[in-house]
Length: 186
Image 1: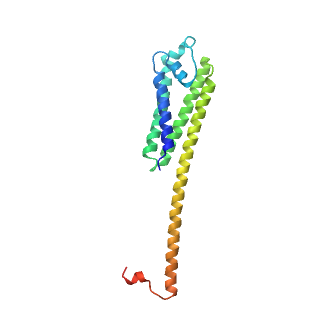
Image 2 (image 1 turned 120 degrees about the vertical axis):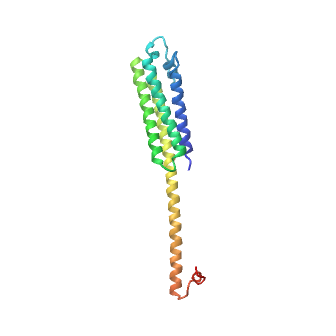
């Protein structure tokens, strides 16, 4: 079964973090523009340190790493989820943990710089990440439950067929009749 919601959410978060990284590496107003995309209005006259390469480069790299992790989760979901669902699960988990960590670092760095309104924006983004993770888990568990139910239905059908064959064989032995299928030489 294809995990459509998981694929879509992984691709969505990969695109979000890749765009944030791309906006962040912009020469003028890089970090301020990325924070503006998140929903925080930052005036560049007060915060001269946000344009410093020592701030921009690590943040852009961290955002890009998270984007690559979500892209990897997307590929794992499309390619290997049937063969090895635990591998895709671990990649998704690492991607969400990394995204939460980067957002937490943005919150800490923004609080150190005195940026106002950052807490609510990061809280909303973390809530969106949590909702996405819960939706992915729900889809995976639903797929697992469907697979287990199908497997148990097959086993139940095989059990009923075996019991019917044993009952037919027992009745033919009790009645001392030979089985008609065995007379043909089969």
